[in-house]
Image 1: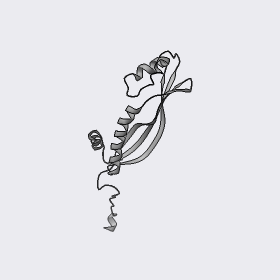
Image 2: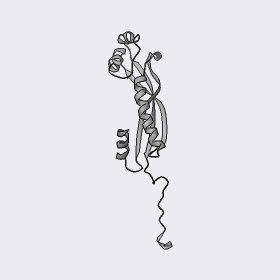
Image 3: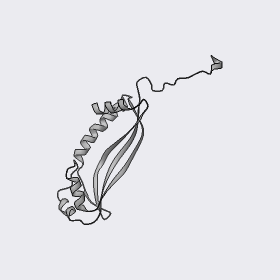
Image 4: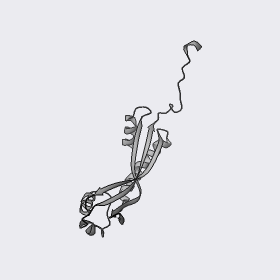
Length: 141
């Protein structure tokens, strides 16, 4: 929450921030254009859910306004299964244990698809929402 508050404060009034978050379902590993396995994204979803809840609270408090949302697939390409396994070893997401030996020897390109949500958020300051300053023409003064 502290980081989000500082990020919001860094925005100029009415400034825009983009919030990219991983969303369910779990990541899918595809080999030769077909589903091979589904990875476990639970650990990543837990932290993503916490971050999303913090942003949602700022929206509910009127500090941020959600102007647009786009859910989309993000595809990460790997030249071999071994490259995918190596890249995923330090990550929070987990490949199924039974899939790892097969991926290690898979010699062709493979793909991981994950769902993501991109939100465009605008900073709002208390008291500024809907307030428009009107200036009368000089002749009317």
